[in-house]
Length: 125
Image (cartoon, rainbow, N blue to C red; front, top):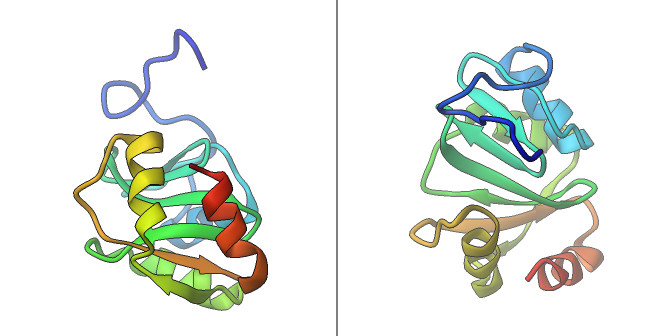
């Protein structure tokens, strides 16, 4: 979205939801939306307007930070059937650096389809 001032300097876009509703919408593919503590920017879920907590790689597939607690995301991921595919896969750091400029974090790969999760992670680099 060229020309749009994004959070934390501008107001988040999309509907105002609860944290749980927003986490569910994010995992379902929403590209905008916000709650009191989370907001979505395309394929990234951010906490406190600037801290990436998840990067969506495909349908029901995401790398999720392990060094930041996001109870709503953890709850919804379990409800949607996402399972831990890989703990701290090396490519997750590469994807995080490319997508959000953040390499100093710990990421796990979560998905409903474990067979395609690794290929989505590889394709994201």
